[in-house]
Image: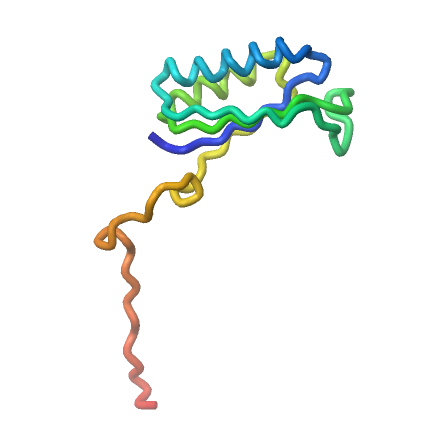
Length: 120
């Protein structure tokens, strides 16, 4: 399982119930594919810095999940096909940023220090 974060911008003309329904469908797709600890953060309706598809605002939603790459690939495909999704971005989070512990000391890379041969 790898940690992922998915940012989705939905059409602002959608009602809150429709937004909730779509987000539930996306999170259920992840859990059906075996994802663990799916968390949804609804940022609400926000104004864009510039027009996007002739729109000036959209609903921002962030989905965090620990999932297999295949499950995230399927979600990425579904988000690309949904007409209500204006933009989406899938990011694989680094292990440390996702709150995971550091690897065991035997797994950490070692750095060799070269000896000074100049005699100085």
